[in-house]
Structures are given as C-alpha cells and as structure tokens.
Image (cartoon, rainbow, N blue to C red; front, side, top):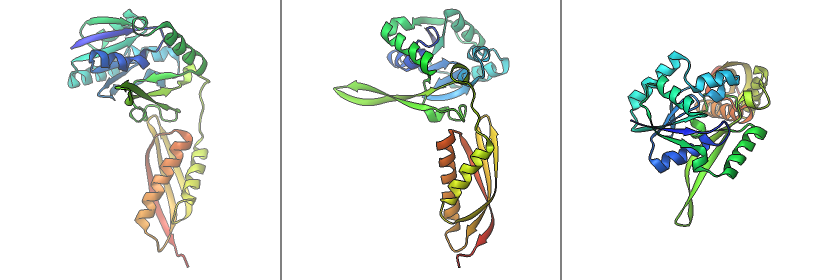
Length: 271
C-alpha cells in the first residue's frame, strides 16, 4: 500500500483538490477529517465537521479515540486499497494519522501550494472565513446520515475533454456548527406540523390522530396514527403518504428520514 500526504493550512482547499490529486496519481482511497473514503463512498469513520467544537474536531481528524481508530483501521485492511491520500494541516498531523491507523510510511508529501495557485488558495480561505464552507469529497447522499439536520449543497465537478464538458464527480459543501453561526434546533413540534400538513395534502387521508418523532444522530423516525378514507386504494395511499411525508420533512428541515411508519387506526366512509 502506497501512502501520499496532502499538506495545507485549514481552509486552503485540500478537500476540494483531493479528488484531482487522486485522479492524477491514480490514488484509490482518501483519509480526510476522520473519514475513510474509497470508491466514491464513505467506508468508515465519523466526520470531524460534525463535531461541536474545534478541539473535538481535531481529535476526530487524527483518530484520537482508540475504538474509532480501530474500526477505521480494520476497514482499511479489509478493503486493502493499493494507495491512500492522507490530508492534514501539517506533516506531523499526517504522520500521526498514519501511526494511529497502522498505515505504511508516507511515500510522497504533496503541498497544496504545489498544485494550486495563490489566487485559488485565497478564494478558498475567503469562502471558509466569510461563509464557513467546508468541502467533503463524496456525493451528498453518501454523508446524509452523518449530517442529518445540517443543510448541505451538492457540488458537481465538471471537466473539459475534446472541447466538451462532462461531470467527473460530486463533492458536498457543509457548514459545521463550530465554524459558522452557531447551533440551530428544529423542535419536534415543528416537524409534527410539517408531517400533518404533508398528510392532509395526500390522497385518501381523513385525519392524523397522533404523530411521534424520534430523533437521533443519524436521522429521524416518524410514526403516525391516521384514519384513512374507505373505498380508495389503501396500500397505494399509504405508500404515497410515506413518500410525501419523507419528502416534505427532508426538504424543509434537511433531516435524514430513516423511516415513516403509518398505523391505520380506522377507515372513514366516503358517503
């Protein structure tokens, strides 16, 4: 296994450029801010960008927790990529990550200044400072569970070949609590209101009797008790209700919906 290091100060665009480095050097895996990324998907780890403050984020990024580092190290051994790019704010940080994950010595150390010009670094620093933007080099749907309740923006990457543009990948832009405007909370009552609204605009729903919201780190489980209109396609209406509720809650709150459970308490005749 060959190990590459990508060094750059915080906010200089390492995560954004990591996919380019991997493509140019045919590197198969990435270690970035507590995540092991392989085959365009998160294989193991917990994103430091989800932590509450910078101190815990740093500990996550260097795999300080022994149990979590063991899980990531085991996954790397199982996947066994031919090469990995390790991102860090200093050489020392990259060396520490390699020790914690039991990786071989770094074969090549790449500095962000060697692959992008000063203007690009200045732009990246401004985006970080003014807008709190952080990039994760995987598609948004891959990190949805870890960032449930955080508003994320897919960032599609295009390249030009033979005078034609084509999409070469997707990254995700997030705004961690510790580096932006502080924490925000969406009350369960607000989610219940959204669920009830989505239900009442769905076909075949007569009444929502009760709605329960169970929130966790990975997302939300919604359980609702309803009365349906008798004489319509019940199964089709229930499936439509589940889809509608999940879509509306995800759209308005950015929560990851794990499941929408529907309990039919009764049927109301149409006549």
